[in-house]
Image (cartoon, rainbow, N blue to C red; front, side, top):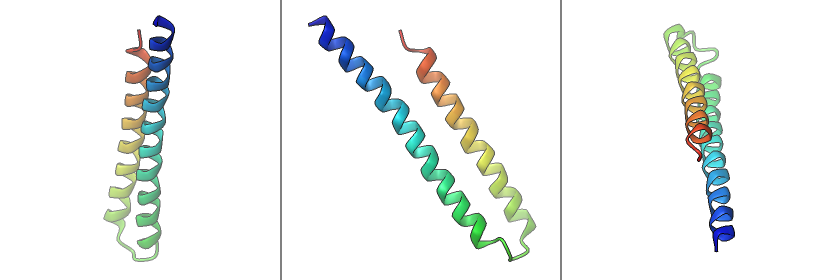
Length: 73
């Protein structure tokens, strides 16, 4: 019975990491699409906002990965 619980915990751990990565790549994909839309428009402030959003999404990804890995007992 304990072996099944350990396997379920491992599966839940991997699923949480995969979900974090999948949602991060989805967000990054949308940001790249927005960047491609305004590439030639000359809206400099919008490009800076997209860059800030990019770094924010990456920071959130790193935080959630570390939170998932280091709270595992």
